[in-house]
Length: 107
Image (cartoon, rainbow, N blue to C red; front, side):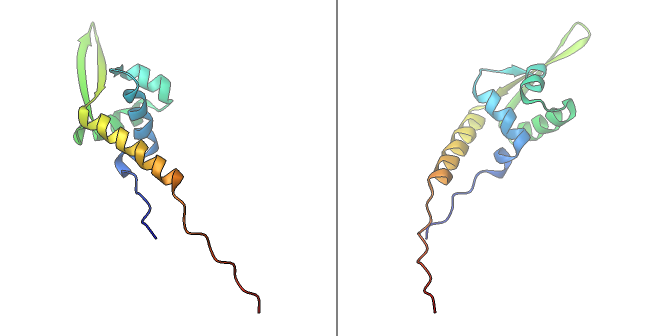
């Protein structure tokens, strides 16, 4: 029996997956857009972006606009590759078929 494919746990976590999925559909997104689209709290987004940046999946660019900080997030090439591999793995999981069980005999 073949082993089940295992998704990357870093990508598979729901909050990070939401952020990565949004970023994979656009060139970049600002923090407020990510907050609106994912419905995650500011604190959760901030922690998840820090984790994703630490492993090289996203780049974070901050600039001061007036008195406010504008945060722009971009998926790196590694990030795009990891998202693509994740969804391929999920497709393989969905199509995985275990060998049928043999009917049990009655005694």
